[in-house]
Image (cartoon, rainbow, N blue to C red; front, side, top):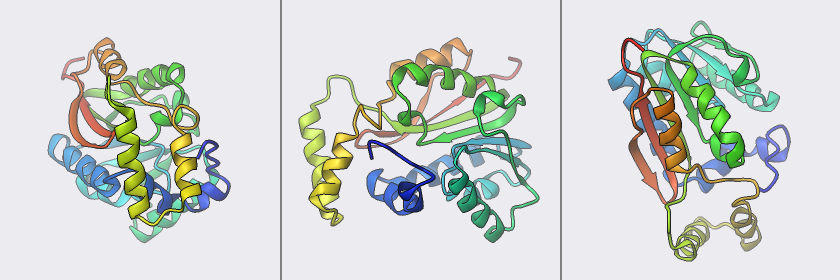
Length: 228
């Protein structure tokens, strides 16, 4: 996991591996869609940054039935997986590919969704991406983010023991577990909740509202007040 090649072998097995690695993965997708359905049910536009294999797309289409979704995904292999999901969901008329880089997206959206992306970036690279995400949210719009995010002053030895026990219960081999555990601060980096809150405040958005925490994987939403 230290080198996440989304266009290589890791990407080919992404949809299976991410469920094993991220606790309550399906609940993250379910609650994100539910929050959007409750907060912006009449949204006309949404930006999905890093949709991966596209598993969240059908639920987003249902949660925001009037919205057109623009996708930002740099991996060619992931885009191929997404295209398969889009075809199966018959969502081609409502989903379009945007630029491959978030910084190249010029529009504003009623909803911006970014799941399991920020923890792939070292802390110094997380801040500009957070700024770009906030900058794409329209007045009255919603930002939904999920990421690996450690507790301050947490007993990491205890957390690692729980995580290791979880992987063992899933039948993962010791070598694979060791690779996952070694990826911390090498291929996966914690998103500091204070950093998130600070960037939201600077962007004049509401403080982050937590929707879910499973071990150190978290899901939040934030709204931009009307008139901003």
